[in-house]
Length: 77
Ligand SMILES: [Zn+2]
View 1: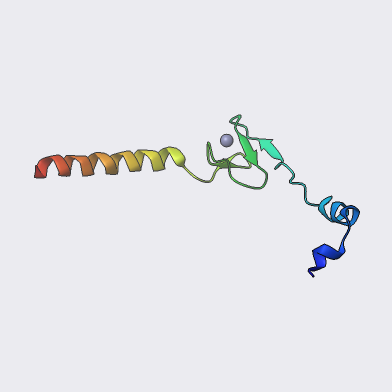
View 2: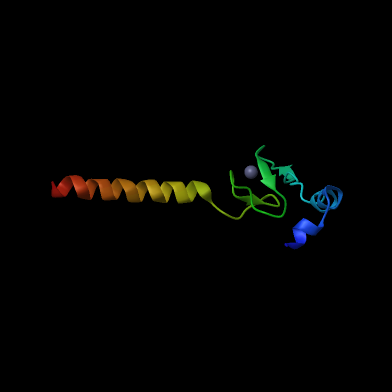
């Protein structure tokens, strides 16, 4: 016998009444994207109106790296 089996449907339902998932409350960033409160925006990298993560610079650096790597790969061929 398991503890679960000693409960009737009403008791099971009462226990499960607290199991519902709640949707995350999202704030709207000044850039217009939905954003989790107290977190930097994933779209523009801003927090409290200040850019704390420069995604544009990251993307530029990444594309520069890619281009460099691509040039090397083509040169070796
Ligand atoms: Zn934003």
